[in-house]
Every structure is written in structure tokens, then in C-alpha cells.
Length: 241
Ligand code: PGA
Image 1 (cartoon, rainbow, N blue to C red):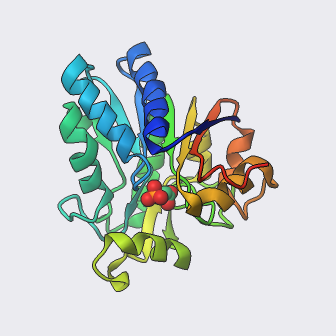
Image 2 (cartoon, rainbow, N blue to C red):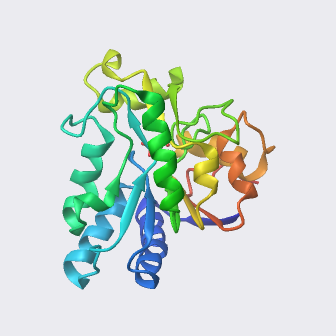
Image 3 (tube, rainbow, N blue to C red):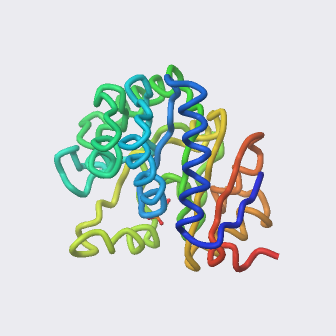
């Protein structure tokens, strides 16, 4: 795993943007595996600005997102489908039919997971972007998730519900279940880019870089990937030796 320590969030976002832009330029039909959360927002803003100023085209790019809350549809402003539309897709002119995410409203959750796994085997990610949870999760693969997992429905960990409650009016409003790509779907990507900023990620980052490869820290699976880059700011890097 390649580790880049950026001095702050701005530099982290810039470095991530350079990597993402190279993928899009090398292959105008690339499949981008995308993530939600606060971490990638700086990168997404740079992609939008670059599309506006430089005309980088996303007409033929396809995207697959990591995860979605169960019970929330794309019209719900707390859904990840809504987040992606608002923070990236509307700003880069990508045709909506080229963007993919689990259907949070699917009644038959097993069929929905099977549909998404089939889609992911057709649309192998040229790059998969990831944040990391303070407990070491990637996407909604919480500690204990098998490395062999594919798309599945999870009960969110209490720590994840707490972390994510800042984005909801009340903690009770955070959905308790979500669809998520599994660790095997993530590891299938050609290239992986992990971003982490802030002191609350320092422990998970230390585990990812220096700890044991274990299902207790789902992100540690990434050390077995042949082309994984981690970009951290100085706060998130503060516990690295
Ligand atoms: P964050 O979430 O980017 O909002 O910190 C990351 C994650 O939980 O994977």
C-alpha cells in the first residue's frame, strides 16, 4: 500500500483529484467506484470545478456507489443517491443512467443484492474510492465482516450510527440497516484510493497501515490489494510510527 501524507484536507483533496482525473483521462469510459460521507467532498468539488473549467467529459463514464441506507429512496435528502446527485453528478454532467447505487427501497433485499453483484461483475471498477470509519469499516462493512463478502444488507454498528447522526436531526432518524458492497466487491477494483482526514480517524489509519490484517478491522484487507493508495492528512497520520 502506498501512503501519502498531505499537510491538510485541501492538499489531500488535490492529490486525490489528480489520481481520479488521470483515470478519467486515460479511459473516457472508465468505471468509477464512488463513496459518500464528508471525506470525498473536497475531491468532488474539484471534479465539478474541473468539468466546468476544463470541460472534462463524463458522458461515457459509469459509476457504481458503495452503499445506500435501507428504506431511503433517491428523493429522500438523507439518501446516498441524493447525496451523489447533489454533490457530484449534477455538477459533472454525467447521464443519470450511467450512475448506479443499490435501491434502498427494494422490497426483496436478497434479489437487490444479487442484482447489484451481477452489475458489479459487468462494471468492474477501474478505481474504487473509499473513506474509512472510525471503527475501521469501509463502505458499511463493519468489524467482523468476512473478507469474502459480496453485496449484502447490514445492521449498522452503534459507533457508525453515532458518527452519522451528525447529518440527521435526531440520532433515532439514522436508518439502522443499509445495503453495502462487500469486501470482495471492493477488492475486485483495478485500483483503490482511500482517503482519511481528522484526528478521529488516526486509530483506524494506524490499524490499516501497521496493524494485523484481520476481519476485526475491515479496512486492513486493503493491504492485500496490489494497487492501493492511502492519502491522509497530518491529523489522521498522527499515530503512524
Ligand atoms: P466520513 O465517513 O467520510 O463521513 O468520515 C467515512 C466512512 O464512514 O466510511
